Length: 179
Ligand SMILES: O=P(O)(O)OC[C@H]1O[C@H](OP(=O)(O)OP(=O)(O)O)[C@H](O)[C@@H]1O
Ligand code: HPA
Image (cartoon, rainbow, N blue to C red; front, side, top):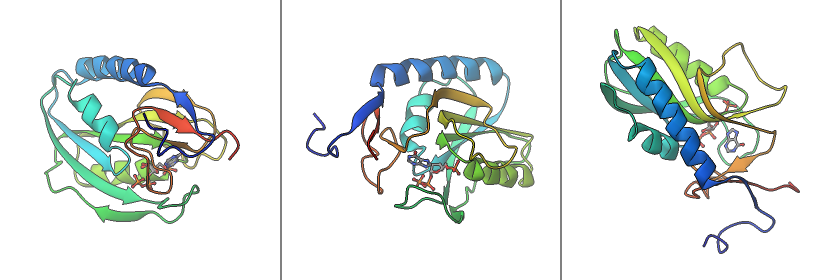
């Protein structure tokens, strides 16, 4: 169905059914860990939007939802300066924050978001990502608390992740083996 928009040579790295099962497992874990907590569930836009939608509808916990926007890649495949584009307005004081993002790559984005939430007075802040990219360029000591899938070191797109700001809507995760 997506042949019309997929770049030539694209291959699926992670299928829809694998993603769906991984999100189910993650939701079960969060439902247990946050059963008695007052939660602020914050999506990191833009990349986190599809994963956060799928995950949040499976969460049976007491939570408010908002989002924040931080960006450091733009149309590039390598990260640059981190820019805050939007900060959430809900009160995080004494809340247990769950940050939800599509990917942990070099770690700058989640570390900055985590530090900001703690400065706002959150009681705790944890992070959940759909994929963690395995390589040795990882910055900082910060690691996500919940990871659905570990992936090898490819630039990936689909399920919220962009290739030059496009193709976020793909329901599976793709890569270009020859890129
Ligand atoms: O671990 P890092 O190396 O910091 O990279 C991860 C971040 O990069 C992407 O965002 P991007 O800056 O591309 O903005 P976007 O969400 O609008 O695509 C992605 O959505 C993560 O938020
Ligand atoms: O591999 C990636 N794909 C899309 N966006 C990203 N942001 C960090 N790494 C990636």
